[in-house]
Image 1: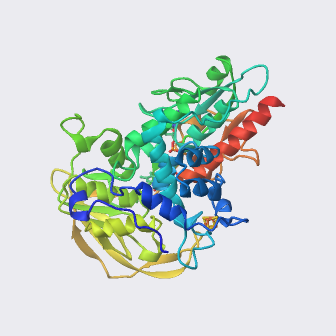
Image 2: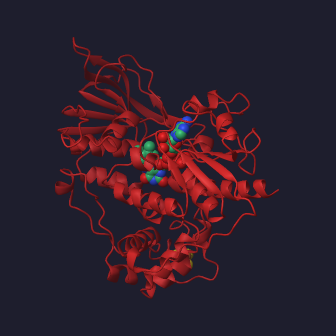
Image 3: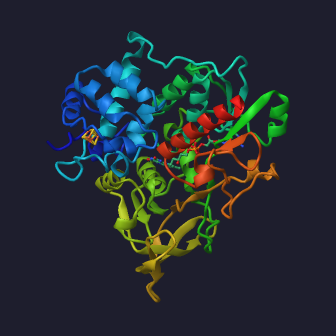
Amino acid sequence: MPKIKMREQPPHERIKNFNEVALGLTEEEAVQEAKTCLQCKKASCVGGCPVEIDIPSFIDYAAKGEFDKALAKIREKNSLPAICGRVCPQEDQCEKVCILAKKQGAVGIGDLERFVADWGLKNRPKTKDHRPKIKRAGPKLEKVAIIGSGPAGLTCAGDLARKGYDVTIFESLHKPGGVLTYGIPEFRLPKDIVDREAGYVKSLGVNIEVNFLVGRTKGIDELKSDGFKAFFIGIGAGLPYFLGVEGENLNGIYSANEFLTRTNLMKSYLFPEYDTPIRIGEHVGVIGAGNVAMDSARCALRLGAKEVHIVYRRTESEMPARIDEIKRAKEEGIGFELLTHPTRFFGDEKGWVREAELLKNQLGEPDASGRRRPVPIKGSERRMKLDTVVCAIGQGPNPLLPSTLPDLKLNEDGDIIVDDNMMTSMEGVFAGGDIVTGAATVIEAMGAGKKAAAAIDRYLRR
Ligand code: FAD
Ligand code: SF4
């Protein structure tokens, strides 16, 4: 049987609101979907999951309608299942290697994870506590500092708290969650889900200090004096890259980071209820074609733009965004200018962007990323009317904290270098997530947080 299609808000309705697009499975649908799993003895899907959830076991419980047990099984490995069920690229991970993928189509593992996690959030007060028992790390509880509350930090903190450590997360923003809170929009990942899953990590005994910028509010040395014995740096890749073309400083040109933070974290879409408006024009161009670009384009549409175009230098097959999100963006009427890149922007006398000059490309030989390199076609210049531009061409590591730590070794991109145990060049200081790998995925950041928690435990017990 093919995978059950999750219900969604229809495109003409959803472009007028920020409510979640995908509506989840019903209980009957979840049981039906779970029954398609073959319960393979050597389950390839588990190897495709960066945190190695026991997928067949949780699906088996779901097939029997034992959702509390299914949730407990997932939570053995994953503290943020309602988030992962929504944003993980399952099509490239567990579902890609599901034995049924090449036959009738993979089991809807992600949809089932989401269903079970949502079921838990709705019914938790009624169900018994399935949190894994806290094992003490030793006679003394050591203090561990986690810097950054994205998926890497939350996972590392949760795992260490379960082992009995005294864990504090330091987060520079006023809300925990990292990109889950400030980047990914409400219509893909409702913020009450993030709050509740961060709340679950807190319920394991983790203390979260917000508005605390490590490197400014206090440095690592001061935190050492406060008694912290080990550190995990999970500060993500929040520094936006720019195109470096003429006119890029004009008003109305945002980095995706700023645009999405204003929209999601500062809730500009709820203006005037929230006193943080955002200016959006009628003709919006979003440069790039990853998840960040799709999110920016779809936010711009919902914020009232008349037309929104993705401008991407390669073709659709090279687009890094999730296939489902590209499909949804198309359904919503986002335009796609492919094999195209901007070479400069033109403004009016008041310094507001009014037009972009675009150049057509053709694809050449593969570059370092393995994707075919876009080669500009001479003389193909044309102009496009744009009064708002969002640059979503990637992010790099924020240098603020590393710049305060001269002994911290970085690679040429500014990412933190770690050894096989996730330890940096500084004794007792570990790191993981986007700050080590460069911009990647939620589940990879969680996998890194898990690996680092195990390594910190070994380090403190040595
Ligand atoms: P982050 O989530 O970036 O969290 C880092 C945290 O550290 C932030 O809260 C930051 O404020 C804090 N911080 C930084 N410096 C300091 C400091 N000095 N002191 C204290 N705190 C500090 N991945 C997917 O798998 N699926 C998707 O659909 C998806 N969509 C995305 C959409 C957008 C718009 C973006 C930007 C990314 C998306 N990603 C997606 C990627 C994914 O969100 C990231 O790979 C993941 O969040 C990285 O986790 P992290 O914990 O390493 O860092
Ligand atoms: Fe079920 Fe597919 Fe995993 Fe086999 S590989 S156990 S069919 S989800």
